Image (cartoon, rainbow, N blue to C red; front, side, top):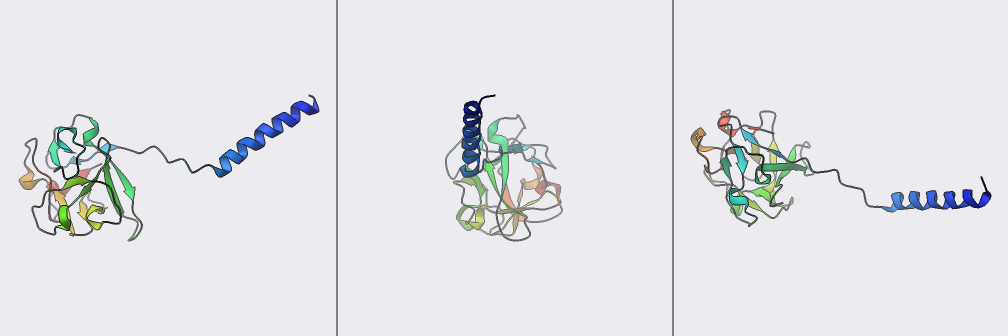
Amino acid sequence: MHVKSLTKISAVAASALCALAFATPAQAEDDFRPFTNRATGKCLAVPNSSVANGTGLVQWGCNGYSEQNWTLTHVAGGNGDRWTIRNQNSLKCIAIPQSSTANGTQAIQWTCDSSNTDQVFIKDSWGRLRNLNSDKCLAVPNSSTANGTEIIQWTCSENFNQRWAY
């Protein structure tokens, strides 16, 4: 091999290494999956594929559409168990409106902001999603199996209507 060829190869390799060294870290592909309620077998969903802030969340028969897929993003603090939960279709996060602490408040989607504790949830070993601000869990009221049933927050219990498979 000629010295000129080696010099050219070395320059290309050095250029590639510099590009890698100064590139921003590539984010791993988001792992979007459904949350399925353990009591009803239905999925947490954004109705009508809405992308609007304030859209109330419901349960719906699982169909694999993007409005039923969610990803967890770690939020610093606590024991490493704090998450925002973002929808694949709207790219908005689950929130409790107006930082309500009242039982029965319907969960909504809102532009993601992990500094807002009404969007931060603790996913425990039972699969409950407990809001950091209200200390209440996402639930399907009365374990209703009807499509369109509102997803609300309620005092955390051991009931299956508060457990979500992910």
